[in-house]
Length: 71
Image (cartoon, rainbow, N blue to C red; front, side, top):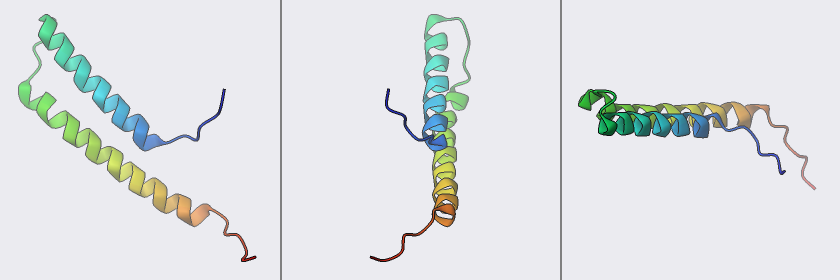
């Protein structure tokens, strides 16, 4: 299996979508009374956190990657 590099922003975005989807699913089944505002605000907050994580990761990666000498 081909290895992929770890991308924390995708992990955060995926966990956010999974959490919101689970919340809506449990609410639809009647197993949990989800506060509407919580589910409405969870997705933009998670996506904002994922974007912030991607920006920080890109900044730190740019500083740590060795530069190749010109050929």
